Image (cartoon, rainbow, N blue to C red):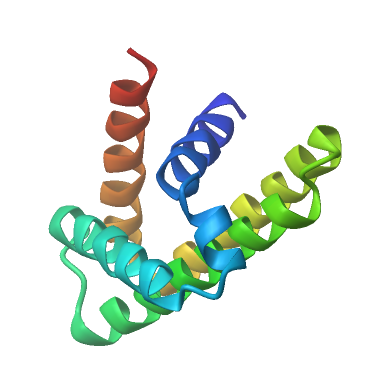
Length: 120
């Protein structure tokens, strides 16, 4: 459970500047961040071309959802946390559907090392 919250925290920290920019309709920032995230995942997990496209689309959906939730629930941190946990759960579920078992292990390992680095 803690890993999920740490992963969510990592996603939030990566997307924090996006909330105001996405509210202004800056899709280029979201697209750029989705591409960067996908490249980072691809370097750790060795995605096929088809997987790369699917993971990039998933990252863009997640970043857009995070930005929308931050704008929508800015005044209600408890509801924001609850909705963010739902987004994280769906993201992880969709990643598991895209990745092969060995890739999923590599993804989880990379995610753990990334969250461990962000804690210190």
